[in-house]
Image (cartoon, rainbow, N blue to C red; front, side, top):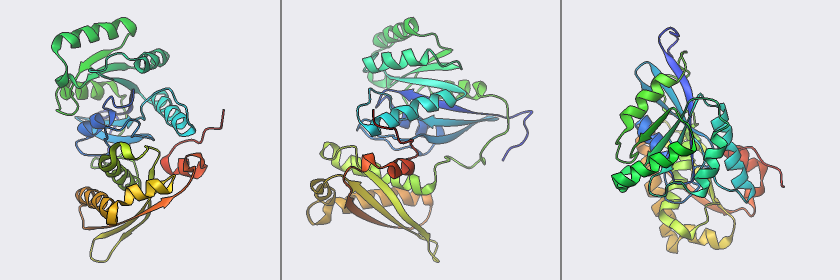
Length: 304
C-alpha cells in the first residue's frame, strides 16, 4: 500500500454507456488482465465491477458499470440504478459510445443524464477500427454539439489503439491521495464472485441466444486443498426446466464444455490446478428474490 500522499494520486473512474459499448473490454485492456466478463449478449455486466490500473504514480480504480438502457423488469431496473450510482460516486466519468452505432436513443438519454454530473467528463468513441475516418469525425462533431466534455478520445479497446492517451488523462485527472489497494491487486471483486462471472461468460458464449440473460451463476464453495489445488463448486440457476436441459446438453455435453472453458481460464487467474464442479438448478422467478440481488451486489428495487 502506498501512503506517500505528497506524490501519489488515486480515484474512481466510472465507465458508462449503452449495452455492448465495450466497457468490459476497455476495463480489461486498461487493467491488463480480465476482471470483467465480455459477451456479445447485451447487459452482461450486472453489478459494479472494479478493475485497478496503475499509471505512473496514479492508481485508477475503474468502475465497469452495467449498460444503461430503458429498463422494464426488476433486474433491469436494479442494473440501471447501479450504473448511475457508480457515475454519481466517481471522481471522473467516461461515456463510451459504439462508433458503429453512433448516437442512438439510449446514448441520447445517457447524455442528458450526464449533463447533471458535475465532475471531469470524457467521451470515448470505441471500436474505431470498424469505422471509416470520415464517419468518425462526423460523429465526434455531433457529440461535441450535444455535450461539453473535458476530452474526447477515439480508441479501439479490443485492439489497444488510443489507450495510452486515455490512461495518461485518467492518471492526471484522479485526485492526489494515497493508493487504496496493494500495487499487485487488479480488482476488489472477491475471487468467488469473479469465478462465478467467468463461468457465466462461458455459459453465454456457448449458448448464445438459446438461453435468456436472466440466468445466473453462484459459487457455492471454494476450498484450497493440501496439494495446492483449488476445489470450486458452482450452481447455474435458470428459471425453467427447459432451460436446464439446454445448459446440460445431450449426454451432458454442453455443461462439460462450459466447465472445461471456465476451468481453463480460472487456472490462469488462480495460478493453481482447479477442480471445477458445476450444477444446474431451476429456481423460478429468481430475478424477484432479494437474496440473489445481494449476491450480485445490487440493491433490490421495489415494484412500481
